[in-house]
Length: 284
Image (cartoon, rainbow, N blue to C red; front, side, top):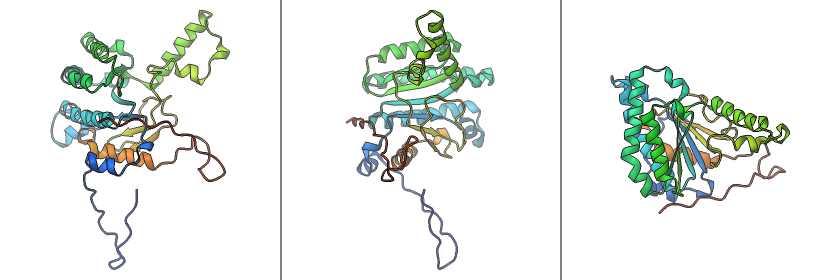
């Protein structure tokens, strides 16, 4: 981010200009689409604080956050990203009051029911990842129905992480590999990073290029620990219910300005940059 220079006539820093909101047209006209991420992952944080600042119950923040989900999903689909993954409910979240958990599960079912037609029409494939057996049967049934109804779609893969833990995902992958070794179907020496990654929850989706975290917290919170090894991280102080297209565009623009070396050297400094993947098409 550029820091405004000082006003030399007064000897103090002038107030920073507030950026004008960006609409789709302005973003498209000024953006290099060759530098879009393939997969964006978002840690949706700040619902509780959003509600508390307004004197509302925490569940009001969760309900308000649905609008932000729609915004992030719409931008991702319009720009032709391959995948969008949202961290909706961690395994640690089961420690919350049962009333809050029940409301979250109900909101999830309501969201799937209300948005299903949109997902189908926009060629979006829905998927849930995590230890889904932990979820209530009615939620599991709704998730399975959403996956079934969108399984033939070929556009954006929209993933919601539920009862999710990055460490648990790694443990689950290790257990799958251990069973294969125990059955004699796999040699331990054959296990490498690619094979291990193929046993994660969503092995057919590319690793996130960009990880977004709202509410200003500077941690990854046990989210996609294996997959974000080389992800660019973008943090905004905006609380999730207030996250809109403006913030999504800002994150994408910031990503486009970064040089991703993957352990190599800068271009023009005696080495080569890693070749970029083919840019996704833009949905009309």
